[in-house]
Amino acid sequence: TIHSSGAAFPMLILKRRKRTVGKRAGMTRPKIVAAGANLWLKVGPRRFTVAALAKELWVSTTTIHAHFRGGFDEIRTEIARSFVDQLAPPYKPNQDAEGYLRALFQSAIETLHKRHVAGHLVASTLADDPLMSPIFAERLLTTVAGLAKDHDRAWGLQLVVERLAAMILFETGSLALKPPVDAKASVLKRISALPSSEFSMLKQSAAALAAEPQKRADPQYSKRIADHAVDTILAEFAKGQPQP
Figure: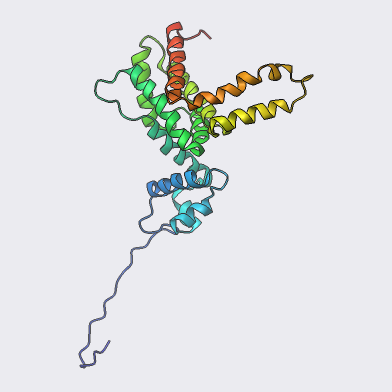
């Protein structure tokens, strides 16, 4: 290139580092998972797609697939793992195993009730694979070892995960998410529309069933439910592992 003064500037040749097709600079698996978790909470499972995630990150779907060869299913698993990791925080100083478990169960209810679209994902993924989050499994196994020293830890972990998953599934259901007054009215309306000749037990139990959602209005509700679940687990530990 010739400058107006007649002097020639040296030509600079810049070499660009080659990237694998689909790998955009600065895009990583953790970054994609974090964006995926936020999108899952924002749009829910029915509207979550790889294309929607790519749009959120301003990349092509090819970029997403370059990091996640398993596509949607692999991304979904990693998002679930990120949610589960957050359910089991580190032990606090001088915190015992029972106190930790009670706090974990209560926190799970309160956190996933606010983030209910994560609830079913967490419950189903944990039930399918209790070891899917090594962080979660390690801290729960530590808790089981403190509560049931003489029992098989694998059995103890399975018992805790079963109770936790069932609690999360129920407490993030559509009825649980309605305001207590609306939930009560919904139960009564649905039962009242049923013929007494076929659903006599439901008719007789209508008042009791409608009263259940009202309990969620109590500020201590999450603590009571968590304590009940943990009490059930401790009772099972006290009885010991059933023989096959």
